Amino acid sequence: GAGVSQSPSNKVTEKGKDVELRCDPISGHTALYWYRQSLGQGLEFLIYFQGNSAPDKSGLPSDRFSAERTGGSVSTLTIQRTQQEDSAVYLCASRPVAGNYGYTFGSGTRLTVV
Amino acid sequence: GENVEQHPSTLSVQEGDSAVIKCTYSDSASNYFPWYKQELGKGPQLIIDIRSNVGEKKDQRIAVTLNKTAKHFSLHITETQPEDSAVYFCAASKGNAGNMLTFGGGTRLMVKP
Image 1 (spheres, rainbow over the protein chains, first blue to last red):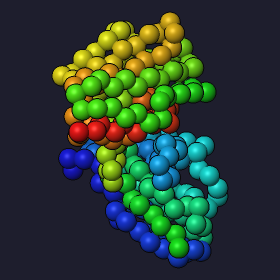
Image 2: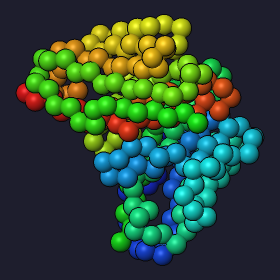
Image 3: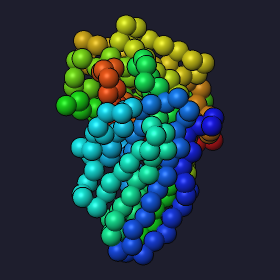
Image 4: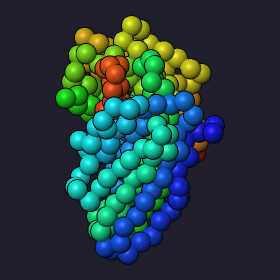
């Protein structure tokens, strides 16, 4: 596609439920990143995928968070047993592997845990 | 690791005035510095970037300057318009295989008509 696509755009879930957030990066972009943005705050790094390499999970806040990337393209971020503090906008970004370039971000998924 | 600090956190200017946002970084190996604009309800969008082999770059009303010695870079917006109102983020990276961007905390720019 022309840009990074994220779905759903909005998600309201009950505390304790699991949620899955999807990211479809720009075709050919082998690097994919997940960030979290709490209301009015900056960008918190969560996880990074680069080709077939093991992902960099150093930003995941707890073991309730996991992500996978199938076939080097679509990625899914899963949050298990959601808590109210998980409420935030989850942003996905992708980048071409070659060269030193900025990311292209999706529009994000706004997650609200009630 | 890299640490990027951004100031001010909020900035209010009158339409037509200039706005300047400043960032400092800690890792002297950083060599790529993009700026992002985030409008309400949208993801951040790359608006301009600069690499360490140049000191200044312009694109119409926006410009970025880089001082490698002092490890700071700035975004300058001239003749501000209400549509410039947004949150702006600076970032830095070393351009290695990971090319992980480290972001500043953001500046909320408000342009008053």
